[in-house]
Structures are given as C-alpha cells and as structure tokens.
Length: 314
Length: 254
Ligand SMILES: Nc1ncnc2c1ncn2[C@@H]1O[C@H](COP(=O)(O)OP(=O)(O)OP(=O)(O)O)[C@@H](O)[C@H]1O
Ligand SMILES: [Mg+2]
Image (tube, rainbow over all chains, first blue to last red; front, side):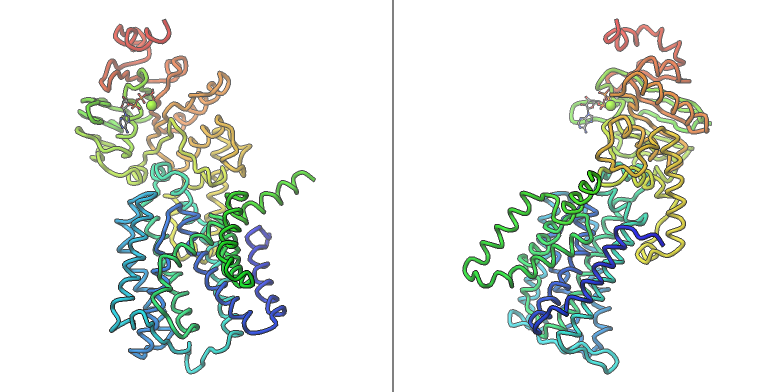
C-alpha cells in the first residue's frame, strides 16, 4: 500500500498517543490529556461542518451537552446500560439536528451564525430550567461507564479509550473527505451553484454534515458525562461553542489534523499558563490573536505549506 | 423532436424584464448560439433553463418533461449541465477533484461505505479519477491534473469548468462565454473543443461575443436584445438581418 499524507498523519497521531504517557509524571497529566482528546474528537466533527462544508455553527456545544444529559438521565434515572444510553443519545441528537438542519442551513453567513447561536442558547436554557429532569444549575451526577459488568475507572484507562476514539474519528473523517461524499461537501463550500449544476443536492449535503457533526458531539458528550461524574448546563454554554470554533480555526480549517492540533493547544495552554495567574486570559488571547494574524489559514495548513516550499526549494 | 422547448419565458428583476416572453426550440445534436449585446439577458436565460432562477412566467420543456422551476441538481440528473460566465470553480479543491465532483451523479455515493472507505468505494473512485483525467486531457488542461485549482491560470480554469460539466455526461451542455478573456489561439482551441463535444452527440448551447467563433460553428443562432428575440436562424440569415446589424453588430463592429 502506498503511504499518503493522511496515512502518515494518522500513524504519527497513533504513535504520539501511544508514547505520550511515558512523559506523564502523574495522573493530573492524564486528566488534562483526556480533556484534550475529547475536545479533539469534537473539533474533528465540527471541522467537517465548518472547515470542509463551509457552514458555521455557534451552538455545537449544545449537541455535546445534549448527548451528555441524555446519557446522564437515562443511566441514572432509568437505569439504562451506558452503551445503550450513548446510542439513544446519538440517535436523538442526530434526529434533532436533522429536523433543525433544513430550515437553518438555508441561511448563510451571519444569519446562520445567529440561528445556530439560538439553538445553543435554547438548549442551555432548557438544561438550566428543567431541573426536575436535568438537575438544573446544580447539575446531574452520572455513574461510571460500565459495559457488561466491567467498569471503566482511572484516568489511565480513560486516556486509552479517548485515544482510540480520536484515532477512529480521525480515520473516519479522512475517509469521508477523500470520497465522493467529502468532495460534494467541499464543493458546497467552493461554489454551491457550481455543485448544484452537476447534480449535487447541496441542501441534502449540508443537512448530512450537520447531522454527522452533531452525532460526533453527542457521543463525546455521553463519554464525558461518565468520565466527569458530574455534568452542569455550562458544558453547553455559548462560551464552550465559541471555544470549539476557536480550536478549529486556530488549528486550520479544512484540515482534520488541524482540528486536532487546535483542540490540543487550546485545551492544554490554559494549564501551562496557570503560573501567570491573573494574566492567563490575556496571554491566551494574545497568543490566539497573533496566530491568526501571522497564520490566517491556521497552524497546520501554514506549517504544511512551509514544509512543502522548503522541500520544493532544496 | 426538440430537446429543449422554451415557451413565453419571462424573468423580471424589479422593473427590468431581463427575459421577456421568449420562445424558441433547440434540436438535438446541434450547436445553438445565443448572441446579444451586454445585458440582453443571455446569462439570465441560462439561469432560467438550468434552474438557478425561477421564471416569472412561461414554460420550459426538456425532453418533453415540464422542467420550469426544478432545482439545478434535478435538471443535472435529467441531463443538463453548464459552465459559468464568472467562474464557479471549487477553489478549495485540486483540478482533478473539481472534475470528479462533476461525476457525482454517476458515483451515487453513500455515507456509510464512504466513512469506512470500503473497497468498492475506492475502486469506483479510482475509475472516476481516471475518467476525470481523460476529460481534462480532452478539453486541454491535462497538464494541471493535481494542481491546486486556486493557482491555475484563467484559460485553464475555463477548460476545467467544461471538463467538470462533461463529467456529468449531459445531453444538453450550456456554455456561457467560454472564450471570454482568452487570446486568439486559446479561443481557436476552445472552438475545436466545442466542435469535438458536439461531435460526440452532445447538444451545445453557446453564449459568446466572439462573432467569428459563433458564425463559424453554430448550426442555429438566436439573437436577443432587451430580453426579447431579435432574430433567429442560420448564421447567414442572422448575419444579414438588419435588426441584428443595427442592434448588435452595428454597435460594436461598425
Ligand atoms: N440577479 C439579478 N438581479 C437583478 N438584475 C439582474 C440580475 N441578473 C441579471 N439582471 C439584469 O438583467 C439584465 C440581463 O442581464 P444578463 O446578465 O442576463 O445579461 P447578459 O446578456 O448575460 O449580458 P453580458 O453579455 O454582459 O453577460 C441586465 O439588465 C442585468 O442587470
Ligand atoms: Mg452574461
């Protein structure tokens, strides 16, 4: 088999995930790494929508939160097995995304941003106010993830699960993008009318990618709920949605590995900056601003281009 | 039997009648040109035929099915495709991928097999890529196969759009000013490409300002002015039509 760029990237990611724990001195590192991996999975899904299909969503954390709450509610109140609850959550969230997508994705630019923002805010409000079901602002306690009598515990095991999930997600995303479906998605971004006149039902593809990214978010949400043990409406807040978009943009839109890199950087950076205490947020903001000024296409596409130019020149 | 039949077609933008009560037919296997001064309504007519705009009135029959108001992707399915006066390239993709999107209908892609990259998906993709390469060579931009479309010269992009449209295997191909912005040599090459496309049995509708090209390759010409039919007929007939001479040829070339 011929090794192409994406394959090499996938192998490199696998190697990094496998070897990184050797450098972890304590379980706090695992904890941070799991959050970073979860965010990376979310961003790979969101990148399909934003980076490849060129649609914006400012409510993506809402789908993540819904997945988390469906899992939390079904496992604690109805005693459903976690895996089944995860699947039910994915189906529910996918269905909701499907129903919302048609009318919403007719909109473009700022209007689409506003509409998705609205979805996120409505989900956030419902999670806050329907306390009888969601526990309201106090949150909801969720049990361990257990499958067929076997319970997943400890940061180390969660790390491996999240790592495998990320590799699977990256693999699926790379496959999709390099297929006729992925080309149709990218064509929607490139020129909607150009795609339509050769037979691409652009509306259908926009709905499809919206649903796929929402399902990814729901699955991560379900796992997050079990790992964290406590979920609060804040995980579906506007701030979290914006954070996810920032990760995708920082790492590089329309780049699966860019989404991973962006997610990892923005998940880890706050922990590295804690020693700056009060200035943490300002420094984080400065780093993001300067990255976008000097690498408007995002980190990974810019670095790849530099490498290629160097390869071409020598 | 006509391939396309337009009956009393109209499109108004606010107060402007961009296309007004227009009727004509296009017979299969011909090269049919539409000429007219700037703003005559040629592009609007293309947009109406290919479903990009909804008509304000009138009927469009394609292969004896009423198609007015159908969306572009449905019309593509029925066998219609086009290029654009202002390029509509997918600049976020390579050249060959642009053409592969053109074959979308024939790949009929499904999500799950694509996510899993099943062998059947890979095989059909390889075939699609080979076909796309052939088409790029056919229209004369084979040198840009793996090029980033955003870095290609204008003339090659014009050809790339034709290759993309051909990849959908249309019965009716509408070309909106394929030679605009090209030099004389390139125009002549495009002229050749159009003839070869028609030679394969594809019916071509051509909007073009290059009169030498239009008079040379058209079987039939429709002249528009202010959205209305000014004249119609063979190149010789249209060339001698006094209305055409005063409204169009007179203005520019006299
Ligand atoms: N989307 C639109 N909204 C409003 N007016 C439009 C629109 N599209 C076209 N028009 C108007 O309709 C008329 C016909 O325009 P059209 O682009 O069809 O002309 P054309 O014959 O293609 O001209 P050209 O040779 O310059 O390409 C013009 O007056 C134009 O301003
Ligand atoms: Mg025009």
